[in-house]
Length: 330
Image 1 (cartoon, helix red, strand yellow):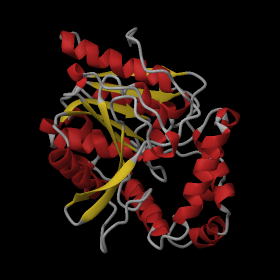
Image 2 (cartoon, rainbow, N blue to C red; image 1 turned 90 degrees about the horizontal axis):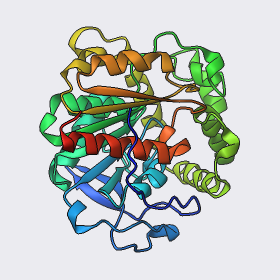
Image 3 (spheres, rainbow, N blue to C red; image 1 turned 30 degrees about the vertical axis):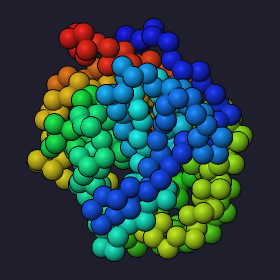
């Protein structure tokens, strides 16, 4: 997998999240963070590099994973800001996007919202990037709405992993929490955790080296978890989305993600960390093999969120794909 040598924006690990605002999509109000041109300061002190006029037509849209939010893309989006304008969404029920009553939280429902956003708020087709659950959602959009997707980048997508090993998890209760009966006690225990404990749990689960997580980003994560405690829909969104992921894993036939993958026509980059505790790297070769125009990048000493642990490498790989596609070499 060739990495681009084209200069990237400087990586500033001290910057805060990008500026954000709500965007109407059907009956929903989605919270969306945007990279901005002109080197302007963003919200919370975020500064991103300018987008040159020649690059204004390129748009990259970032889709977070289960329990994540638009802040999962701060560094990667800033690195690529000189090459494409960026949109990072909070999916319904996550971050600051409140779901409407009755929202089903299925992967198909999330994909429908994402497709509507791309149609209504971007000059599609876009460079679509998804991590974990966001990767599975992006696969559905790429397969069913190909006119919206210019290229696809999947970072540890939540494809079926039917041989889970609880020892991979930072907290074994996570493996039990969403079982209908047995999970009740685990859910109570997890709900009693403080925002700081929840943030520590997420970092241990998703990072190969939790000590490398920047201290100020940890404070941001604690603040975000603390804010979500006040949302009566947050836990419902997490539990229902989790159950829907499990449901798709046991779906056979045309509803399976393994059946969706061969229908993806967009040039695709699949990125996986060797120390992914959430979705095993064993799923990486099959994922890349089933998608017709996919190439695989496996990163050593990397966990479930390569875009956060190895943002520069992921940015160079993505830019390498974009350049290869433009040159007709992908």
